[in-house]
Amino acid sequence: MQYDPKKDKLVQINKSKALFDNLKLYTGYSEVQLEADLADKERVLKYLVELNISSVDGVGRVIAEYYTDKENLMKYIAHKKVLPS
Image (cartoon, rainbow, N blue to C red; front, top):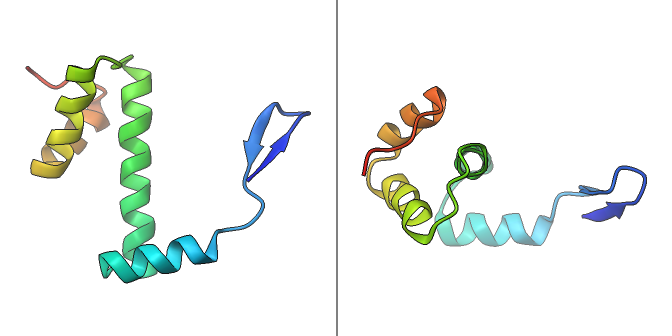
């Protein structure tokens, strides 16, 4: 990553080879599986931001749902609805 002052944001210069190699080693995922998993996690983070979920309980609820019933959570994300308490 490198800071681009014109855009005032971080931009990706290159993919971290060592990071992805370590993730594949410890998770047993292929590169395709790893990319899909990271894309899902990115969607979860964007969901938290879009719905302004920032409390410890709110974030914890979403993360717990991700690891216990990911399919259900992704339905809520697709419809941009808040998970019931």
